[in-house]
Length: 295
Image (tube, rainbow, N blue to C red; front, side):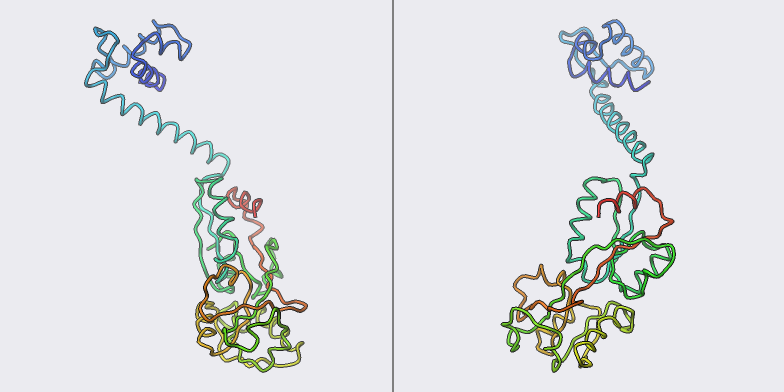
């Protein structure tokens, strides 16, 4: 049994004619008749009742028709997967991202990539920024989306791409005196109780130092009541009127009907969060390279 015999049999069964099947494949009727007969001899059963007009499948032929179509489909799938594998388009892409970035445009990037390369399994991991950096170097992730809390750009053997400079916003409860403002500066927050969003689990990272320096440039040390990298908890505490917070806009831009929460743009030099994608220079996997080209 070979693949051509299976194709010829399916064609004869669907056309109910040796002549029409032969015309489809540009071979003689004698040739296709012989191929079907050889197939029947190989299987030891009669597949086609040639005494009827038009010809018809025997009970065994009806069973084999379904199996033959399934065999052909599996063969086509196998060939497609082998071709994809030869170009590196089969595999897994492990993506780590900083907490809160699931609300950004990242989900759309992943969706479009999956539609283009459906045989690449994308797995996602939501972590602290310091854990993301460690995971990249430990080969837990192929690429990470993070804001630099570990000064990772100073490390050897990495490459990166700037994804966005996400503007910062002030998260306020609706009854706060600043809730009706169109914008705020960090200097105006001097007397506020701050619920501080940190990128790391330690709260004393390279990224933390950067934002604490912005407070110093505004002329004061912030009154930090609570530190967390759990954005949902911070938002809940703001809504409970325990304080205010400064958050990247990608966290808040998709929030609708946020009860007792108001978000006001924070203006001033450096009032943004730099989001970068980072990967190891030595990682030359085709899945990763195709992904990098599309972000």
